[in-house]
Structure formats: structure tokens, C-alpha cells
Length: 230
Length: 395
Image 1: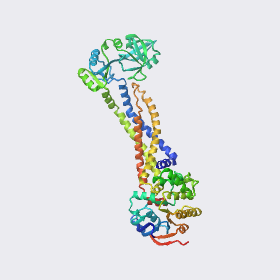
Image 2: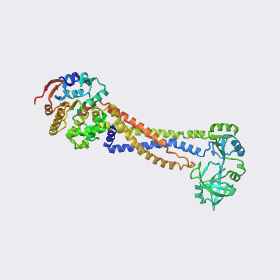
Image 3: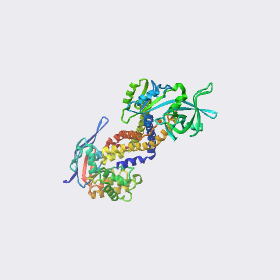
Image 4: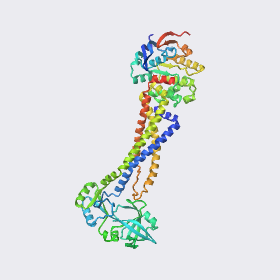
């Protein structure tokens, strides 16, 4: 693969729990090309969420390297990795985690405001993104006034606000019903088709099947890595 | 955006926020009152002393002005020697005493101040004019109210009264030519001011060429304490006090007031601090997930700190603004109670509002608001993102 956007080398993450050491990720090496849609799957406790946190720079590996667009994320200071996440990465989580006090529009504006995007520009882009995820008519609604699927759409719009190189999603359909989950899968496919690299961690077979590449993990290691057959 | 987020977060739990703001308001009101109390008496006493422009006060040896009934002998000679000093511009002798005024079948007692009308600094005319003839007097509003007399009436007044023999001494007719506000006397005091020589004659031999007090003005630019030391060398048989040294004595006597104010002010600040810290900490604990998500999407640690500190400051400022009004109302009420202490000059305020006090209270509250946000903001900003997300997912 010539156009790598993300690669890991011998990535390890150990946790100290009481007197024991838990090896959550054990020497994972992975290359992801620009524009790929990768699903990381596996049983509970296999280390896939830990893997996602390491790839996204919100956790620090015990050893090994994480490189995104040529930048060594594992070597960054807290301040550097925070700025890197702001400008280059997007995150979607199972529980949406929107700011309940803000409207949908303000939630999408939040990362752009942090990135010092001028107000007029960020409001326009936030409206554009909310229209893109199908919520153009609900920009002034607060999270409590939105359904679970709508909240997750706002979270995706927020993740796309600063035009990320990679969008990380941790169980994005985990709290949605089957119908809404299917809509979410379609939206993620649309986002990927429009050029954003996606790495998703999921239990959801339907979501995993939508990805073009599926990485199976078990006991902290990659046991299978193959392109999906459709 | 962070200001907006901080404000919107506070409004999420309106009832809780309003109750905390009210708690802070009570604390802020108490703080303002304590700041006003710590400086009010001193400032109003100083204002009273400097209002008439007399910098030096000369009393009988070993006493403070009007501290006893003692008087200064050879008043004319002393007045001349005072006026001989090149830095002295005005000398105002004052003799104190009592007058017994017969009104119909009643006798009304009044404090009497004998002085020289054109240079006196004991009263301000509120109606009528300053006495100019030997039989002219001005009276306090309380005296006129109690006696039912008015400007233009003539009274019969005596400087001495023997209750056993029911006889008066030093009696003469006096005409009321004005109503006056007596600067150094309580508002409820019945008082009469009359020419010095008239009162001396009425008091008889015991007051011949005697005064209770001299008040002295010095030339503009002259150092009052330097003049005082020079005069003390030439007049060793009297006690002299300058406004500055009077203020020092006041400071000593009021020190317990300031200590009380300091302690109660510190307590009110501590209460405000604990209220805000508790509220903001509870608020942070309720939204750990939101906070770590902000960190995950790239919001800087210091911006998280700023947002949480802003919440603390917003509560403190809102409480301070409500507390300012509450404090002023409380101070006015307490002042009206304390001002009724017998013998207290009307010009003395226990709680004197000065803009500086409000700024001091506001500054202290803002500083405490910042401090109150330190612990919860530190807690919020130092959360490990991955671990907190995992705990939130499990919880």
C-alpha cells in the first residue's frame, strides 16, 4: 500500500490491575490506506476498544509505534496529541456524548470553535454537516429533543467538523435499534465514499460487513485481516 | 463558545444554580457589610473631624476634648499666643455647659456650646442665621421640637439650677435666630449655641476667661503635626491633638471592630467558597463523560479548566451582584439600630458605603470564585480519557 494514512508497529498495551498485568494489546502491526473502511471485530475483552484508543491517540501504548499521516502519535505530548486529534481525527462513540446544554448546531460547532474557525464560517459548515447527516431541520434542537439515531448523526457531524484524516467509531450502532442502526451504517458508508478513512470497532455483524476490510482480534492480537467479500 | 457552554451548563440545573447563587448572595452581603463595618466608623469619624477644616484641638491638660468638665484657664491669653503662630489662621474657642430653659411650666435641659459665630466649627445653620448679638442663639431641631419654640421666639435660660432649692443661676433672656445641625452631637440631642462671652457670664465666676476647647486651623500647606509640636513647647499646660493623632486613637479604640469584621468577612468568604466548590464539583462529577469526550475530540486541558473555573466565577459574580443590594439593605437597617446608641454623634456611621468597598468585596469574591473552581477543574481536566470512557461505558 503506497498511500498509508495510519500504521502501527508491534503495538502493545499493558494494564496493571491490582498485582496483575493485563496484556490488552499484544504486538499488533497494522497498515491502513487512505480512504479505507476498516472494521475491527472480536469478542468482548479482545482489546479492540483499547486498540481504537491507541490508534486515536487517546491512550498511550506501553510499547510500539502509531503513525498517522507521518506523525508519530505515540511520541506526542498530551498537548500535541490533543491538537492532533482536534485537527486530524474524528471520533464517534457508542453513547453519543453530545453536550446536553448545547443545540445540535452548537455541538457541531464545538471542535471548530476550539480550532479557532471564525464564527460565520463554522456556523455555515455546521449547518452544511447537519444537512449532510439528514438533520438540516433540527439544528436548534438540544440532544434531549432528538432520538438516539439523530443524536448519533449529530455526533458524526461533529466528528467530521474539522475534516479529519481518519474517523474512529467505537460501537456506533451499539445503542441503536436495528432500523436506526442500518441508517447509521448507510451514513458511515456515505462518509467513506466521500473520502474519509474510517476505522470502526464493532460487535455488529451488519456494520462489519459494510466495511471493506475486517480485522479480527482475539486476546490482544490480530488473528485475521481480510478484505470483505460482498 | 466556552463562555456559552459554561453558562448553558449552569442553566441546565436552574433550581440548584439559583439556590447556590442565593447562598453566595447571603455570604457576599455579609462580606460587604463586614468591609463597610471595618472602615465605616473610621471613615465617618475622619469625615466628621475634617469637615469643618480644624486640624488641631486643644483641651485641658491630660484630657481629650469634652472628655471631662475640666476647662482651660486664661483663655484670652492662650488664644492670642495661638494666633501669634505664623501657621495658625483661625482659632475657635468653645465652652461647653448646660442650659435650663423654662417653657411655660416646664424646664427643658439642653447642651450649650459657647463660641464665636463667625469662626465656629460646631454646627451648620439649616435655617435662619448665625448669632451675632450677645442675646442671640441657635438651637437644634430636637430642642425646637421638644420646646415647641420657633425661630424668632425668646426664651428664658439659666446656666445653673439647684433642684433642692428649685432656684436658677445665670438666667437671662435669649432670642432664637436660627436652627442648626450640631456636627459633634447626637441627632436626638437638645442643643443651643450662643456667643462665648454670653455663656461665660451666665456660668459666672467658674467660667471667667475659661473655655473647654480650642479648635485651630492651620495655613494651607503647613504640616499640622509640626505646628502642634511647636505650639506644645510654648503652651505646655494644655493637651493638643491633631486630626492624625485623633485618628490613631480612634484606630486603637476601633481595632476590635476591625478584627471582628475581618473574622466574619473571612467566614463569609469561606462559606461562599465551599458552596461554589461543592456545586461545581457535583456538576463535574455528573458529566465526567462529557468532559472526557471534549478532551477526546481535541479540546485542550486548559480550556476545560477555564470552562469549569468560569462556572465558579459566574456563580460568584451573580451572587455578588445580588449580595451587593442585600448587603446595602442590611447595612442600612443595622446602621439605623446602631445609630440610636446614646451619645453617638449623628455624623458617625457604622456602615459607610464607599465604591471602594464594593470593588474590594467584588474582587475578593471573584478571587474566591476562581479558587473555588480550581479543585473541580483540576479533577475534570486530569481525567484519563480512555479509562474514564471505559468506566462510563461499564457504569
